Image (cartoon, rainbow over all chains, first blue to last red; front, side, top):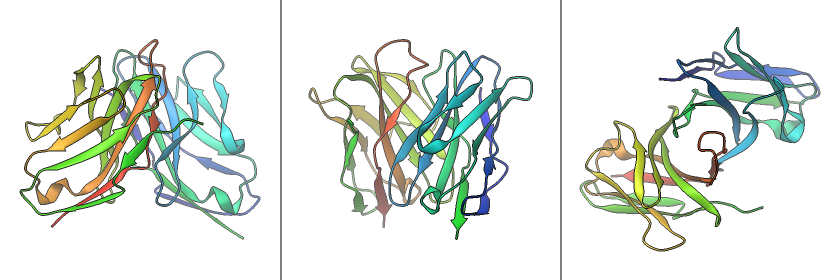
Length: 113
Length: 116
């Protein structure tokens, strides 16, 4: 079975500051990792994914994430946030051979001027 | 960019009634999913569907739930006799053919189901 932990339920940050949203996972099989963003009253939009290869993956809107197998982490980063980045961010994992995505509880990113 | 569309955006139903939530997956996708998110909780997997049959389901997906692909474009989730605890946001998702696990799932905007 797989599980995902997002320790920070809410991260407040000022505009143009860097941000890191943390994600740790556990799994008994190899995994594929994803970050999704949910803007108010909208669905889940794929930000980026790690399938294999380079451990640093780049996504939309200037976000990137680094897969660290030894620490079982997949933290999301952005060097300079905008007000429009205010949203809920979900880390998700899919185990090899499984179809279901297992989600974390989400981190609400609050960007203020 | 192709989208997954869900209707209605909000459904209000009396407890004990049947409800059908509808989804139109991305047209060339072959794998379909339903998830739900109870208010304040995490997104939970319900079921996946491929080649006209359920390929994986969670313990949440009991006999009260069923899924169907009635035609070439729609994918539905039916709850036979709704309970108060079925109130949640229901998300439909789809993914392309190919190696099963590494195709990302694309989500719709969800249907908010409120059971009274």
